[in-house]
Image (tube, one colour):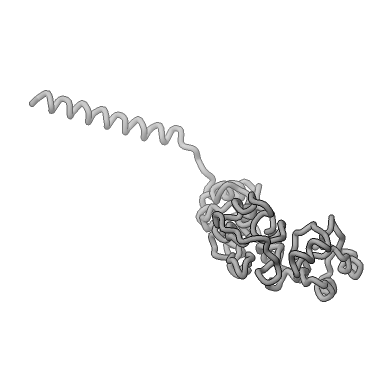
Length: 267
């Protein structure tokens, strides 16, 4: 019986010694953190979405505390979080127009023709690997299989009539949908009264008119009419320089396909 007591006592003594040693080592080798970094991390929403360009909220907090990232770098938190972080860092948070995701396609079930019925895996990446990139006749168009919807943590995207739509009120411009789209159809824009082309096809007028009623026909009318020369043609597709765009809306009104849209209106 005494052997059992001796063994238990020895184990207890060793445990206490290890505990004391670990406690000493923890204090001796502890890495001090910037109190501002901890406060900034507490103010961030904690989504760890990567929309700010950093691996997660902890990395962003460290960058803000070190002065390597602006206080309004978190797209999820928006102006409210930027203001809190600005107070912690002692600087004013600069706010600007809201940013949101924009889908460069209007190829709905009515406007876009289909080559065949796609019955494969309900996944845009999988569909992109089959002939034509999916059932739609336009190989550049939205497959409508919802990779972007599943990637969005904020419920800001949904598939409506075969094409992805963005709810601007819910969108936080985190960029998850941009990464999820295998065709590169989604971009992040600033919501302001300028215009953009909701089409990504480079097939040219003949092919576009065969497969989609709302695709850019490369007619060049918008470029010819633009009073500030903000529109150029790039390999059969109109491209609008948002820095030059004056927001007059002439291109939208004159586009025969109706594929030019104001960035502050719904598609």
